[in-house]
Length: 184
Image (tube, rainbow, N blue to C red; front, side, top):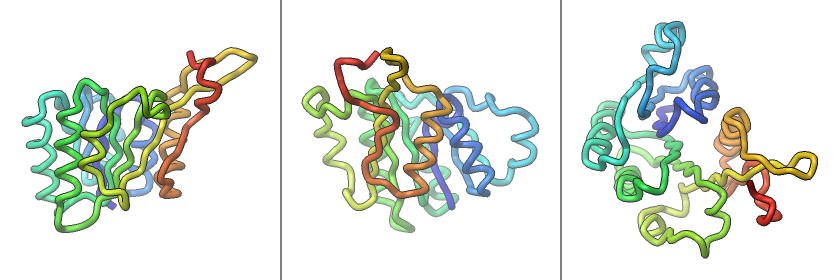
């Protein structure tokens, strides 16, 4: 399995480690890929490609992905966590992944809780570049505990992402998004 993970060293670090432990080849694009310890890097060097890049710089971002994509003859899976300020890069990435001819790439797009309320976000640019067959949406909700709400922990996000990927769920909500009035 050859996977691309955008944001795999922050809240998705445990998910990244899980897929490494499953012996997947991973290309990880992150602002700080050196967050992995030396033991992880030396033990998994042959299956891990760490790329430090700012995904808001669309041309550089896509260029870095194209290098690995060509070398690996495409990706089987992409797990994408990108902030809304880089919408141009996200659209370019979705277009690139859907155009690869070597293999179909299953896309797992992580989005904040506002994605649950479609009237609050304009996803038309994204919708134009996704293939419904291979696109999966993972919505990051929140937790309610003792009548108080809190955002998800990194561990909860990683566990929910792993669950969505391993079960090929089309639309998965980690935590809850209802009642909306209770979100933190």
